[in-house]
Amino acid sequence: MTATPAPDAARNRPSRYRGIGIVLIGMSGAIWWPAFTLGAWHTPFFDQLLTVWVVATAGFVVVLIQPARPRVKVGRAIALVIPSLWLVLSFTSAPAADDLWGNLFDVLAVVVGLVGIPFTLWVVVRTVWPDVIADYSPRVRLSIFAIVAAIAVASFVLGLNQSRFLTCEDFTLSGNSEPPGCVHADDSPTA
Image 1 (cartoon, rainbow, N blue to C red):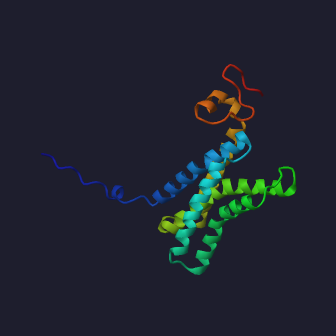
Image 2: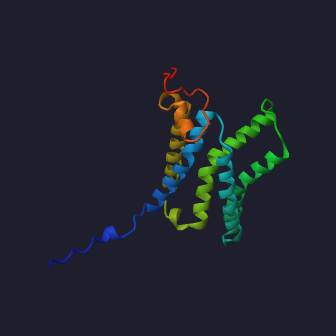
Image 3: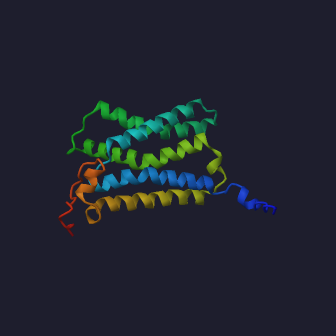
């Protein structure tokens, strides 16, 4: 009987970058679809905005009950209440799409959807799993946001150019409406 060699000690230690990988993959996975829909349909979908609100609200409650330094607690609470402010504004006013208030409201919806998703995830991760990012330099943290931003921009560009690689039937089959400019399978994409 031969003895099994002892596993390498390095293999048994958790990777120092495992937490970064989890955060980066989670944030990227959460941002791609809203960015794509903004490119393809020129608007974030309501379910995406409400998902941000749900996660931010749950995170807000955690921030309120979790012990933390007051400055940190207030900053996180303010960040997590922004989607609720957007929701309250949507109940208190019905802006017309062609006036300044309507345009500002639309911009706020996009910010809540696109910026709110990764930012909310970041704050929630820092709140419920503070050790995951604490040991990393500002450069590493900035790199995470830069990568997520690049994925969001790429997803937006893919949404804008969906007619070059997807058909209307692809959207219908997946349960989505047909975005403006989509092409049917028997048509060729327009240049």
